[in-house]
Length: 276
DNA sequence: AAAATGAGCAACCGCGAGGTG
DNA sequence: TCACCTCGCGGTTGCTCATTT
Image 1 (cartoon, rainbow, N blue to C red):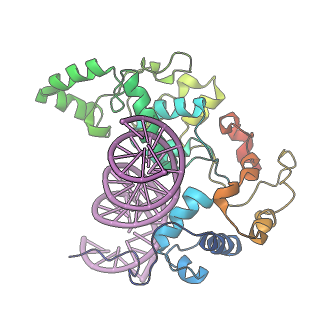
Image 2 (image 1 turned 135 degrees about the vertical axis):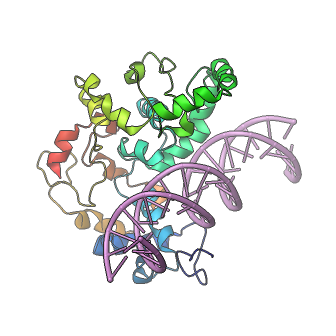
């Protein structure tokens, strides 16, 4: 029984998106908002699969996206979140304003992984490499496996929570507490970090409202200067651009919207929430 | 200067979750 | 309860560009 393809493969274009396609997609979403992705390509006049449209939008065209490499704070946060959540990139991304799961995943695979290995840390377990090797041997024991499964049923590979001393001491170290790598445990740690608004925000049940509903906040406090106008108005100039190429100018102007420029980690989640 | 190799990243694929009739 | 559909996620691929030989 073959799975039904997400779209009609015939006549569906694949590969890199052109500026023209980007323009069509942005134009459509600005006009209609995000609706049924399956219908988007048809309605927008794109010969693309709906899935591809969604991916393009969420990973590249969304105006609140930050571009460029992750800064040190973001990178440290990714490492720590990965230690707790494992490869749940979307969950990790939800706690990094303006970053996408794909971007974080790529950054992890290309930069952080190597960095950790260089430091002698196993990027999977977040334990010192020699220690994890020893541990792997010990893990042959079915007893320990069972214990791990019981204690951390949802943990990746049923591994016990990684230790946290591996995290750079110069950064905050929320994982210094006993913790597991699952979200429930993330939540469980919240009280520990109550005093730190950033940390407590990061480990809240519901992540900070990073995902704007594709409308810019209308608060007068918005320092970006976008506060008075609508999303449509703000983006209209984009659509008027000749040779539209989002890659080339990266929506930088939007990065200031809704949170502090340059470093989204400085945002105040409560304030953001009010802004919506 | 050209070929080989590696790194980075956008995009694709397949699967599972959740919603609906 | 079941089948179907859409969406989102995570793993993987493959293209492009930079660096090395």
